[in-house]
Image: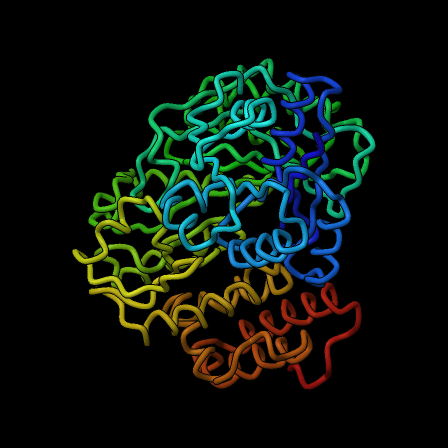
Length: 479
């Protein structure tokens, strides 16, 4: 039997781990019995070319990997493919269809089956059986910890990022996250993880390994063993992990300070520094310790720190969100402002009436407003998020921005004022114009708070960043 595993990624630099997990497990359990093909495209590809690529396979089974960012396109492709190949079986799987599957099937009769949860074992069974329930629950994959890396020699990749799981599940119960719906966590040993990671050294095109583990350091002893192993020079990639800084111990800091610059990247899901909000979303945290450890981490100057906030959480109004922004602005390299999505199956979606949520009923289910934030305020935060991406997260303005924001009342107020000053979306202007806007805004609104030497220092940093970014001298009127 020929089966196509179809992945539609958000951009060309990404790859889909799920389809690789399923393909490799089928070939392990049923070697040579079925032809399993991965077809991987992205949202920017031309739709007729993607549809023809699917059609040209002439497979008996097509399995679609569905997420909030691609579900509309997946439904469209599946509908058109079924009209062209009515005898083929169409299967949907992935987090976006693991909840409310009956409604999906009723609305889209061209979908033959939906697989819930983890799909390795059930897909093997699907290929071997004739009759199937419309909805198939994969439960959990018991052999997860025995699996190695999912990438194979010779496969073509458009990007340079590979994804790796050393654990599945999450020890936390955050109300907005689907990972909270499964109890328990399954993990590979530190030794097994390091054996897996050395396999990536065979792939010269892969430069970044992204752990998809929900919390890399939930077990501090295991995390320290893995990090100690990665210090070995034979591990040459960049390793991206998601961590909780409040769990750090002295041994972890001793290990981290030994890493070469930029070999390790850390993603930190702060979400908010409002204790009332953290308790409401079932994510109690020691925020003081978190921020203290982030500051210690950034002072090491060898690890890139990416921090996340989520706007729209319960009890977080504009004032408390502003505080969260200011609390962590200087203890991270990148500050991502995300916006709450009321995901199917999540606890917070079931609480929508309690907190007066208004949201998009179609994927990605992003909120418009709630009891604490108006639509006007959400929109304002989205504009500030875009400015933060352009000026902080791009790392093109790293020295001048860090310097100039300290002369404003707060980093958040700096960006709010900048948004009012330019009065249009920052994506509409060139990089040169972005530098010019920053200079003009600072000259009008901030220079008054500085002495001459301080202003000259800002100009020095601005010119240095301009040169690094655009590879040419800054204009003379930057003075």
